[in-house]
Amino acid sequence: MFASSTMIGIGVPELLYFGILLVILAIVIGIPVLILVQVNKINKKVAAPQPVSAPDELSKWKQLLDNGIITAEEFEKQKQTILSQ
Image (cartoon, rainbow, N blue to C red; front, side, top):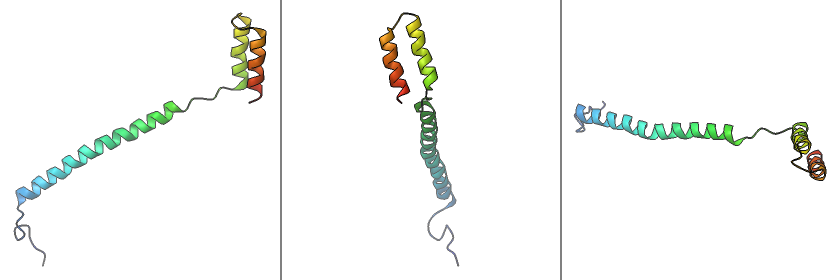
């Protein structure tokens, strides 16, 4: 037969305390793990920048040229860099 809890010296209060301890331990370990999982999900979303298309990039540099912020030489240099990628 199986030994009862009283035969091995463990009573109901001890088992209750042990159960409560297990629940507290699960909470203490579980909450930080859940937080880390959520932080990793957020980091993956934030860390992945959206690629800029070549036409969009050229358009930005063209606006800088049209507004007199950069020279034609600077625009051509950037244009060659963008088109070579």
